[in-house]
Every structure is written in C-alpha cells, then in structure tokens.
Length: 636
Image 1 (cartoon, rainbow, N blue to C red):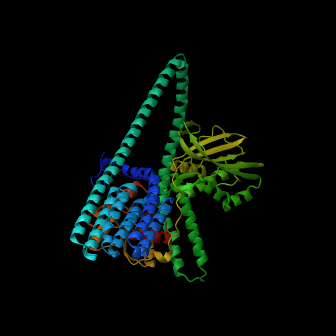
Image 2: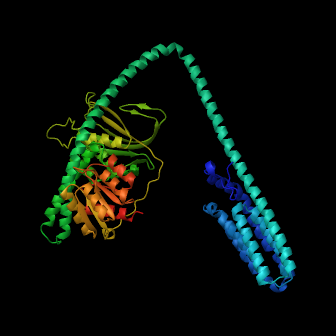
Image 3: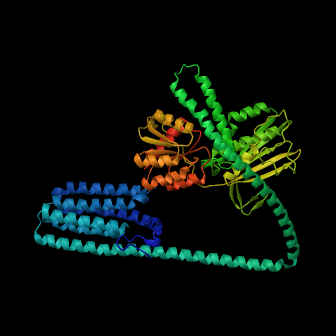
C-alpha cells in the first residue's frame, strides 16, 4: 500500500485509488457524522447551564456565542442532505471545528479570571470531536487543531495576561491532548485506508478468480461440445468451405469496388483541390466587392448571384471530396432522431412531396436520444439522397418509411456487409418502389451508376456513392435488401455513443473578430494571396504576403509576424508542412493557421502536431477567416 507519509493520500501507481477512497470514506462516515453533529450541538449548547452557574453576570454573552455556534452546526447538518456536501465536507467541518474552538477561546478572553482559566477543558472536548468523531481527515484536523493551540496561546499570553503557572499548566494539557488526538486521528485514517485497500485488492482477486472460473467453464463447455459434434464435423467442414468460398467471392467484389472507389477518389480529390483554388476568387472577391459597394448600388444583386453560383459550385466540390473520403467532416455527438426530425420538417422534403404527390412518407422514431459521433450535415444529406432515390423509384401510389432504433448485436451479422458485434443506432429507409435487381445490387454505390431513364429527375449520379462514403466516414455499415417489383429496404448501422450532446455556444459577432496584429500570408497562387490580404485588411490586420515557403523563411529571419496564414500545397519549392518546420526552428511557438483547397491530409495533421493551429478550407468567407484567425491569435 503506497501512502504519502504526511497526508496519507494514495500515491505512486496507486494514486488512482484516492478519489475512490474519498467517496467510500464519505459514504461510510455520513450516518455517524450526522449523529455526531446533533450530539455536538446538544453538548455545546448544554454547557450554557455551566455558564449560568459560574458566570451569572456574563450568561447572555456566552449564551449568544454558544447559540451562534449551535445554529452553525444545525445549518451544516441540514446541508449534509445536499448533493454537493460530499465535495465540501472536509473544509466545512474544518471551518465548523475552528469556529467552535475559536468561540471558546473568545469566551476565555472576555470572561474574568479565575473562571476563564477552566474553559480550556472545553477545547479538549472540541479536539475529541474534530480528531475522532466527525471524520475529519488527518491533514484537515491537524491544521485546525494547531491553529486553535496557537490562538489559545496568543490569548492567554498577550490578551488576558494569565499567570505563568496557569499558562504552562493549561497549554501542557492542551498540547498533549492535541498530540494524542493527532496520533488517534492518524491511526484511524490509516486503518480506514488500509481496510479500503484490502477490500479493493480482495475485489480484484475475486474478479480474477471469477474470470478464471468463467474461462474454465468455457473450456469445459468447449470440450463437451467437441465430443458432441464429432459425428457432424465432416458435414460442417464441407458447409464451411462452401460458405468461405461464397464469402471470398463477395470480398473480391467488395475489394474491386473499393479499388475503383480509391482510383476515382484520388482523381476527384485532385480535381477538387484545383477547383477550390479557382472558386476562391468566385466566392471571396464578390464578398470583398460587396463590402465596398453602397447598399443601393444596382450591381449588388448581380454580384450576389455570382457569389451564390460560386458557393453552389463549392458544394459540388465538397461532394467530390466526400466521394474521395477526404472531405473535412467536423464530428460531434449528435442525435439521429433530431437529424431525422429536422429533415422531415425541412423545405427539401416539402418540395419532394410536391414533386411526388403520389408518395406518402411515414416515420417511426424510437423514444429518447439516439446518439452517435458524427456530422449532422452529412447524415442529413445521406437521408435526403436516399429518400429522393426512393421517391423516384415509386411509379404509382406508394410509400416511404423512415425509422430509427437502438440495437445491440451480441454477435456479428452477415448481411449486405459483415456487421460486427456492438451497440448501434440504426437509420432505416423502406420504399414500395420498383426495387433493384440482384445483378445491380452490388453496383448501386459505384460513382455515376444509375438506372434512371431520360426525362426523369436526375442529379450528378453521386447520391448513393456519397451515402456510402458518409457511412464509412462514420465507421458505419450498410444492410440492403431489395426485390424487383416489391421495393427496397436499406438500413445504416452507426456505432452508438454514451457521450453527452454539447450545447452550441453562439459565436461572436464579426465586429468582435477584428484585430491589429501582423499577419503573414504564404501562398503560391497570386489570387489566393490577394483575397486573404484584402479580407484581413478589411478586418484591421497588418498584412504581408509571400509566394513560397522559402520566401516566408527568409522574411521571418528579418521580420516578425503574430500569425501565419499558411497554404499547405505549394509548387515549386517546399510545402506548407516543411515551411512551418523550418520556421519553428528559429521561432518556436510561432502561431499559424493552415489553408488549403485539398483536405485535412497527413501533412496538415503533421503541421498541427508541430504546433500549427486550426485548418480552414478554401474557398472561405470573410466571416470564417475572421473567426479562424481571431481564435488562433487568442489561443494561449
């Protein structure tokens, strides 16, 4: 048992036991503490009878002092029923005993001699309570006890100028009582900790024995099962080989699909990077121009139209990054029920119902929050794509059902995908449409694969592919069943979480995001440097720009900057990660935000491990840039 010799706290490798011990110590002490508080109040108040006999002229003063302490005791007694009492018990009891002892010392100071010389006995009674009866820990009890000893000594020597014989006699007994009670308190807490530690060790040993018994039982059952299955082994082996061959074929199909997805994903990611750099001008320059134009300028609406077109194009680029599974997904704890209900009430679903009046939509949501770690935006888009496809598959009167449920799989589930054991939140969409043929069932998640005929509603051909990428980005699985002419059932299995949903904090206004610090923009593309520079200047910052990582290193060798806005992919020359690595060699702790039209790649994560701050994806708005820059500058 590893204990600190003075504080008696668990230390070393056993430090984790301290919090458990204090909770156990409190739980076992609470009943006794409440009894002792009532007993202490009775005893402290009953000594007023002695005051009336010995000090009839001062009985009202001493009575008032005792009543104040007794009221304090009752106040703390009733507080013991409050949930926060556990964390405050030790300091509260220390304050209580200090107040009780201090009140007696005060009475000694105001009561005329020789009667006041006998009141030190009351302090010894206080010692008995504080060291042994109200379960104060040794450290707290010792600190309070010696404060009382010091107060008593100061009062008897400097205040009432008691005779030397009385001072020596009373303090001898008082200090002796304090030392004796310290030993008793130390021993009580030590043995309480030892008993807790032994109980903890016994519990661990019991768990080990139980695990060993369970393992032994499993082995016995296994041996028994082997003996019982001997006559069936040959047939079972043939069946397993057949199933393994089917699984191998299935995995080969999935592997080929994954390889195709990876190839297309790399292409999409590269295209997305270039498009994001191009779209930065279409999205950001209009915002800068709008800041300069007066409200009544006739060009404002045209410029806003250009900006909205750029934003829609950026959303398509984000779909390409999602297809490549390289989009920046901000994941938090979300409630699938809340996302589904938001979609059911959304303008998109209202428009869908208007376009397909022959389709009715039903919902069945399990009660309570169904929590996962994910992105509500991406789950919403997944739901929107699947429901839209379902509506387009219904040629006559039909329906779509959206369901949610919590599900625990005690063993793996072999369906469209192999779903391992675990706790899941399941989002299901069922339709009564035309269904999907078995031939097409494993192709529907491929990019641009579609069976839609000309003249019907159509999109980019990426809806199901984006749904697949979203599920995989959330570490989820898909179960898909369909039969031609009877409809389709698709269920998405997302790993459940027990974490709490964080409440959103309203972001600061743009006026609170301005600054005057010096910012260095590092980007190999002129337009990107120009956009960032103008936006930052609008926000009040001092801005300097350079076109390469080497130029940034040279600049910072001569000048300083409060913050870097650092592009990650620059050509020719060193990239953003290497640029930041060289900069912090001479300027450790240099603040930086990372900007890129690509994705939050390993280079970005490596730069952040080196000390760089937040990541902002191109094209960005003035508000997003302002928040990112301000947040990084304010980070300590």
